[in-house]
Image (cartoon, rainbow, N blue to C red):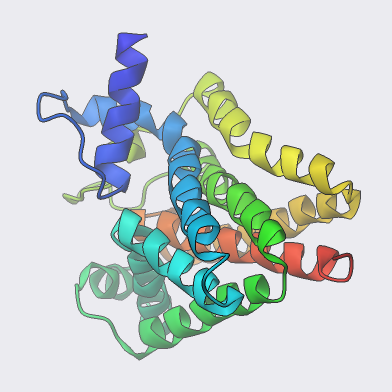
Length: 258
């Protein structure tokens, strides 16, 4: 149990800005094993975002509350996944060879493709959520934060890391994930979504799953074609696209049933 707690703290330390005890042990091997708890990080970020909505829901307009919840969510993670999405937009938008794509994605500066990509995806998130009553926004966030991270974990399981000969902060994750660990991640990833669907008694939300599969298929196909695998930036992009897809599905499939 102590070992699992340390792995969770490792995941919190790597994927968020939340402080953990200074004596928390760290190693690349622990970070690799901590991947199983990436969807649980979504529980944490989702809870914080929902807390913002709950506190502000009675004193601020819904649109303001939703925007502030999104901002707080970005702050908690240090824009970790958003940065990956922007880098992937720049790399795949401006590069025509594997080497050039990798070089662009490694550049810390943001380009036109990254800026436009972030602007559009953040706008789509906001617009999808603002069309829902606050309690559905909370359910959408509670579902999207863990499940989108699980989708990213599946890429680690099924594909190989593309920067095998380079130093990268995400390289420990490239050691892959075992099937039992994938199962653990799936449990943490799906529980909030299933609970939200049952609470709403709207089983058309099951259409979210094939939509996610389609989005994942497209992104993985793109990665495989151009760079032969994934990078940390690609995983961040998968998470962001998956999160947006879930919000969009909640908007389309539930907004008429207030």
